[in-house]
Image (tube, rainbow over all chains, first blue to last red; front, side, top):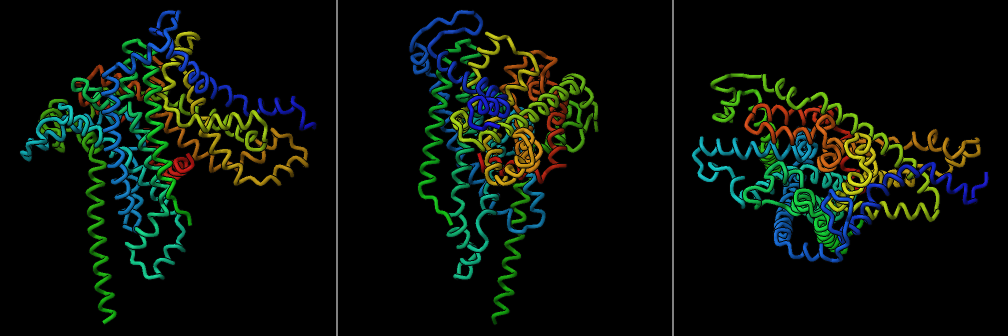
Amino acid sequence: MKRNTTSYKVTQYLMFAGPATVLFCAVVIIPLVYGFYLTFTSWDGISASKPFVGAANYAAAFGDGDFWVALGRTLIYSAIAVILVNVMAFFLFFLVPRGIKGQNFFRAGFFIPNLIGGIVLGYIWQFVFNKAITAIGENLNIGFLKNSWLSTPSGAMACMIIVAVWQYAGYMMLIYVAGFMSVSKSLIEAAQIDGCTQSQATWKVIVPLMRASFVQCLFLTITRCFMVYDVNLSLTNGEPYNSSVMAAMHVYRTAFTNRAFGTGQAEALILFIVCAIVGVTQVYVGRKGEVSA
Amino acid sequence: MYELENAKAARRRKIMNVIMWVVLLILFILFIFPFLIALLNVFKANADINRFPLALIGPRKGFVTSNFPTAMEKMHFWRVFGNSAIITVSATILTLLFSGMASFVITRNNWVACRLIFALMIASMVIPFQVLMIPIVSIYGGTLNLLNHRLTLILMHTGFSVSMATFMYSGSIKTNIPLELEEAALIDGCTRWQTYWKVVYPLLGPTTATVAIIDAMAFWNDYLLPSLILTKQDLYTIPIATQMFYGSYASDMGCILAALILAMLPILILYLVMQKYIVEGVTSGAVKG
């Protein structure tokens, strides 16, 4: 067999990687390039012609006040949700892996929300916020529980954050647990021999060595919160008065409801760039002080 | 004296453990509270759900099971379930086949095409779907008119997941498959194709399990892509059907809760059966990604 001829290489490549390459290019590379082209056209989604309009879509996107409000709202939502998700996840991690009775049962329970799709989750929570919590408020006569939180703008935002914490905390906890497992037991033993108490060993030895897990959990939660769509659609659908429309939903509406595909795509690119800047900065800052054993 | 101190410390630790256990239990109840509420109310008639959402059994109409058959009929549960199952299973199998094969040629050769596609795949993992959805609808819906076929969605799911899967497979090939093994197969007269299927692929079992779990869950729960591709009612998957159902029967809460529980049930059952693998798969997938 001649292993250096071009025809051998081409056959080998196509035989093994051909299908993957074709599908990957068809749904990622080509749409990415084509999407960039779309931002310079005005297309309504129906007509065959896509007139070239230069930078008009970017001008429209920058002038679209609702988009910037939605983006700002997404930033606030993400900032609060990311912090609370990780605090809760670390708290769960801290409580669970201590040989407590039934730890697998607890871990399984905390993880369940992550198994279920955002659409179903959002509707279940809508029922909880609209019916169950108001009923608790009525029965126990607690004022702020009596009216559904989903009916006020700030309440709807709080609901979105609560659902995000509930949805991701168990998943992030598992990543913290995996990070903890990879810390070598001998290091913990060495710390204890050197006279560390358990909490000193935790905070001074284990947590610094788990830095990679923190970076990773933050990255995952940041990207997910930034791109939230399913829960947004099912829990609030942008209500009340479009006060809970997140950036991804705004992009969807610009393109598919208002039929401004070029502007929608320009806004999608802006959203992506903002998200990428935040995510990459976080990873860069996080990795800078990483310690390894 | 020393023993007394020890006994004190042991007792303190015991008390701490009890406190932790209680805190954990409270958190746990809060975490499953939405599911409990849904379960509690799905066996009530609408009048009871609206007036007494916290009651164990509906005070007026009592214990009711009719919500399930009604919801199943209205959301065409078995058809929807079948659509979801066909799409999830096919797309998962294709992802496993294609990305495993691709990672083999990419990892074992230093050709330009291999390095290029691998770099593109890794870079593409940060691109959110929202950036691609508009051009995808424009290309495949507008120009090529390929929407409303299950096969289109299956191939698109596969295309989106091959990058991550190839990345995971290639890591596994690099660390777990010794080159000597492939050389031995070559000397024994295997072609590269045979080497892959008879020697390498069987050794990739754990990675295959991880990739299968991550992707199957993602495909099963995905809403945005299927909702853009499948707009005909008889092609709906479970998330789309749930969303549509909610829109049309918003006042029939009992039915909606039944539909939501039916939508969750398949994946919860799978989780109960395969909990260990799912937890392992999801964490190791995230750690590598």
